Amino acid sequence: MYSYLALYLRDPISVPVYSWRGEDAGQVVLPDVFRVPVRKDLIRRVYLSEFTAKLQPKGRDPMAGKRTSARSLGAHHGVSRVPRIRNSMRAALVNMTRGGRLAHPPRVEKKIHERVNKKERILGTMSALAATSMPDFVRARGHIFNTEYLPVIVESDVEEKVTTVKQALELLDKLGLSPDIVRAKEKTRWRAGKGKMRGRRYKKPKSILFIVEDHRSPFARAVKGLPGTDIVTPESLNVLVLAPGGEPGRLTLITSNALKALGEKYKVI
Image (spheres, helix red, strand yellow):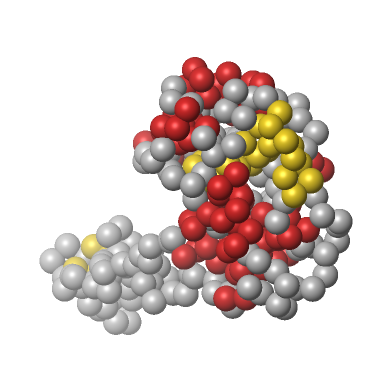
């Protein structure tokens, strides 16, 4: 429980619950975490921290470009005083020569991870989660949907009863989320530049985030191949999937058991 948050911007939020057939199955009150203020500055800071934590430090061999016998001839030889290989008089070693060292090479000890405090990270995650219930933030990210209430809540038996991609697409169509899948598919494009040769051939927009109880359930396996989707559990939830690029408002579908787990994990008093 996190007692440092006492300010709610909204009244308790009630949203409909849908069955695995896409039919109305009642109402549920969202946990208090969906009522916290949306701090875009804090979300951006936590996103950069989690993104840079995944970067692998890289550097150069300290002796790269320096394995040569080149030495400067000094003055009064009619040539510049850059290091030269004696037999051929070819310049070497310095950074403007062919095969020479780099002037300022990348170093392994460079600090690339932006660290944040634990409470900042928790509050940033809670703030990004709250933004998923605000249609204005979701539309600002470019998502397309035909539902009035967000996030979309479905009963937990969907994880076992929806087992194929066809069934999953039919359910998303009934819930009004299928237009975003179409948007992600149509806007998938080839990357410009040499990244195409380095395992990053396509640029794929983000579509629906599925928060489920078991990421290996039949439903999770059915939707994981849909364009732009991400599947996470309440335990692995983070700002990287809640606010891709540091922009809050991800279109989200949550199962009822996962919603309860989120309420217990981010309980605010």
